[in-house]
Length: 230
Image (cartoon, rainbow, N blue to C red; front, side):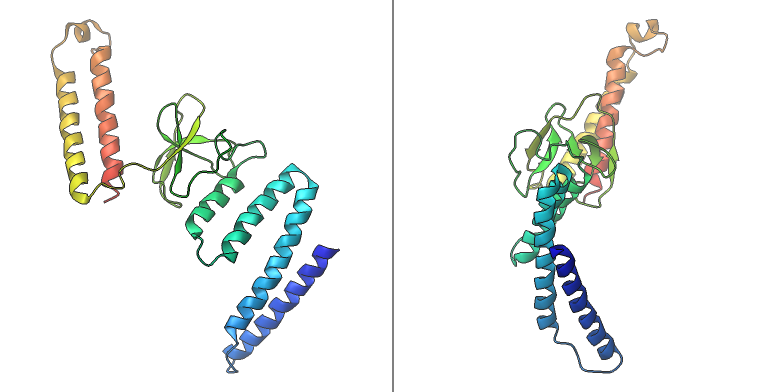
């Protein structure tokens, strides 16, 4: 009953604002927007408070909703809070299943500038809508960036780290790309050398030279990913 009353009051306030704005768009007086912001924010806060209280009393899944609402409400209430980390945290919370560990097992909330990665292989890991648990991916860390999921052959063991390379200048990046190009060329050259083991292999490629070609491909992929960030 309490929630319904608060929603009714918020709906009435929103209706008043929409009517005043429609009158302004039709040639009337400009609305007092600062006052409307305070009034609507007050009603939103009352609704979120009630939703949070009812969700906490309803069970684990509803409690997760309450936690999401709390993050949103705290962020909107602060004039100095960074919206981006809050959005990323909400995204993880929405994507997570009821049994998923958002922090990777240690129970510690990560710092705003840290990103989740797999401590087993060092690749990035994340939670994705419609998929339970943590998954490996390659690509951009920024929300909305291009990401490619891949099967690493093991479950992601989550750690948190500040992404490396932030101190790298464009000149330094050029040096890294040049080094990757030289390393790629060397690996492919080494794989092309005459080899008795390659001659004896049905595939005409021994394990060592196959590993060289695989590593060259990894260098190419890394160069493409970090080169595109310039």
